[in-house]
Length: 173
Image 1 (cartoon, helix red, strand yellow):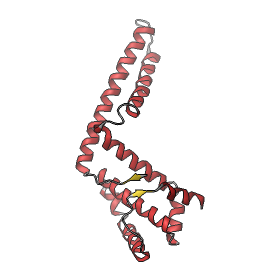
Image 2 (cartoon, rainbow, N blue to C red):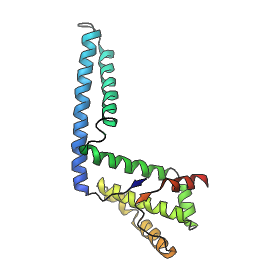
Image 3 (cartoon, helix red, strand yellow):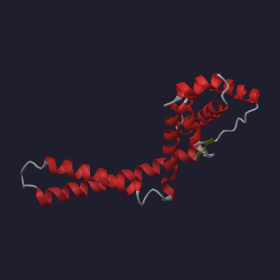
Image 4 (cartoon, rainbow, N blue to C red):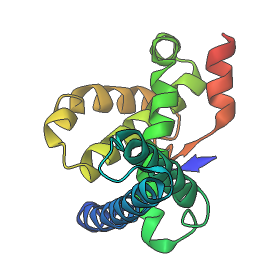
């Protein structure tokens, strides 16, 4: 179950820039090392070694992904980037069934109402974290209208958790 956590946007951006830089340096080092190694082992002096260079870069990409998804995944310096990725991934899961969510929310379905509220809260946080205030301004009236509708129905407006059962309920309908 994914939960929206309070995150300071300034700190988030600073930490994600740092983790991006670290991963980029790892990739560059691996790509250069593997390309050089491939040319040294299989290449021809003064010959066309393009395919070995490309192979080294591709191997660098694969190895970087394996490192990030493996041993680096649990490192504290990568946690903000992982949280942002998970937030966006879970918002996309809701976006993929948004037509059903909005349709059922308009019919006052409590599950759809909660799911839409989670989406609004997550989208608001994502816009804050990405410093994208212009996109957020466009949604303010829709968000406030939905919040008022929830209040009128007696549904708690703080829906910071995404229950996978909500997604399944929307898919099944």
